[in-house]
Image (cartoon, rainbow, N blue to C red; front, side, top):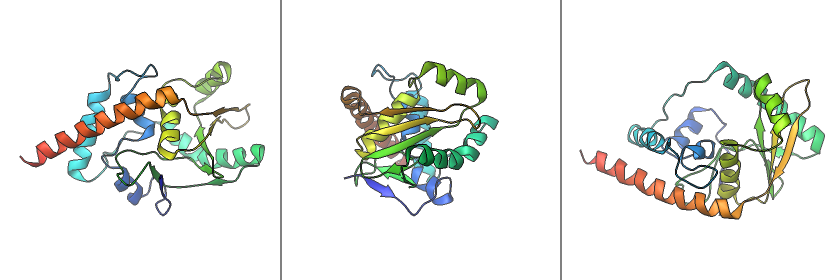
Length: 203
């Protein structure tokens, strides 16, 4: 049964503490490729999470101007999504698939009992590229499928938003074959993460 952390606002101290050492859907592309193979970035992400588990805090990550702009536009994009779809969006802090809390995701919003929304507010060139492509690519594909896996939701609306320009809205459904591979890789990854963490704790 999925667990939704509702009392911790995203990017708050409590949210960062909850996420520390936890594989998150936004980084699942560092664990698995869209073809279901192990990512070349896997070990670096594994060691980063090991350090976070040992410290009990999340490592401060670099945020570019584009990333900060995306954060600032997220609420406007959420309101825009509600306007064009008529869907009410419920915000949550962090989501886990079960009580084990081994991995999770930070959803941009839950929609009703079955849906979710994932918002991307990219820079101008990347937004245009998304409009022309009209499909999900890595790392968004792994993130969106990971969110569906974590929450057991039936669909997720993927919205690319840029003020004053056309939007891209794609409803994505679970890819059961990919999710099976993702879940298997997550189990292996989390077991390895715990083993390394426990080994270093003994020193």
